[in-house]
Length: 614
Image 1 (cartoon, rainbow, N blue to C red):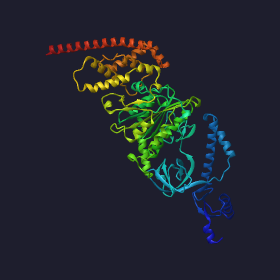
Image 2 (cartoon, rainbow, N blue to C red):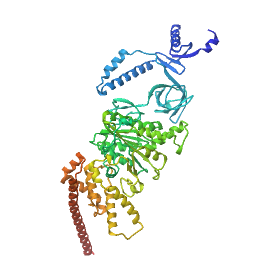
Image 3 (cartoon, rainbow, N blue to C red):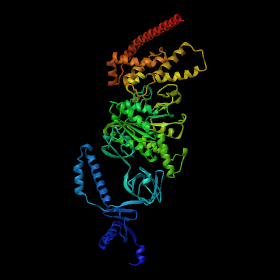
Image 4 (cartoon, helix red, strand yellow):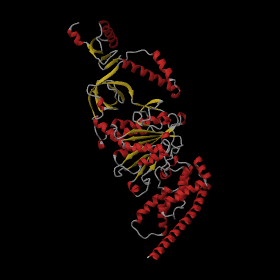
């Protein structure tokens, strides 16, 4: 063959420990001619790292016949068989040993080409590579070092990849290969009670997690025909929320407010209140301090809530790619349970930090910045996430995902870019106000700006009847409170209205980590709207509330059990609550008067003793 002909031939590279003989070289050339329908020139490259087998590279395709490549091919075949078996029966019933033996018996090594590329630039968790001509957006790729990444940017001559591992293990010139798979996360019952990272790897030093399945982190939201109306309550145990802004199973309710106003506390109390309600809880921490997450997990474990909770931790020390995929991974775990007919509560804490992580990635990928330097698809970033929360129709299991996304505002500005985006996606918002928080009103829920677009449809009949006109009464109190700032002379009716409003505001105050049962909420609401607390000094309302609930637990335990079990409040039950509360009020007032009299006598005795000593 002339030198000119050799120059025109396509080149293939054979990497191995020893040079091929003429016979093997001819077999390689015949294979290439049959595969690509053209003549090749085979060039041998010595590679001492390959102890057995070889690698054949043709353009961007690689045939990995090394020991590692053969094991990988067997592993992929076994995983496919496990997936097929899981579709036919429950994963815990699969005989994995038998499945592995049959896979080994029927396995035949095939010449399957893998597409490879070369890293041309790496830094800040972002890699640019060339050569991956057929790669698709969102595909997982693997580098020589074993570090994985996900394709996030497609260009005519290169691709942008976000890294899910140690950046120092990837260098310029490193090879990267396609997996032809999208990003996924292991799921299953074994994750309950565990703390995992965004890839599903345990980070709580409790050993490996037994997964049941492997689901893609990005999935289509349920179709309209697959959904049903939100009409079953997801009680938070927080009086002001369950009474005025009820959350239903399958709803997306935003918790929004400034830093340090109690947003996470509301989400954690909601998780605590699901104990015994057969609800799976998933808490996704995005950009939080590691110490805060450790404290939160310890609190959940202490109160027995970790038994039904999964914590997905992408802390502030994690890379931007890990923070970016964390909420999608948590949602994939939630979808596993939802598809099995279970109810799931998922908390995203918080999506403003998630948007910041995505902005960092987009700027590093050299995408055009828009408003507040966020990329143009930042709305789609959260809409495709939150739309996956739904309540499925009974025909396909009837499971649900209820989402509580958290967003942090700056100086109460709800008109900023990310808050307005998420407000428009969700089914309502609970707005926490700094002024209320610092005045001692906790949870610091602003009744005027908060709303639930599901409304009374997600309330039990008992709660709906007990709530009455409390929201209207509080609105009138706020208006009157503003008006009285300009006037010192108030008539008796106005004073009573103000005392009534102050009593309701103090009634809605609640200690963190102490959610109320349905019957306790109903008792407090009925007593409050019946003006029973009106004549009690605001400083004594917390004590009165505590003792009133303890009194009902002893004197009307049957009524409490009936309300908790049926969710119904009959008119006779309401009258009974008012009568018992009035009798207790008179007893309480007598006790307070007796204490005051005793205190006065003690004070007089002390004064008389002081006078004698003088």
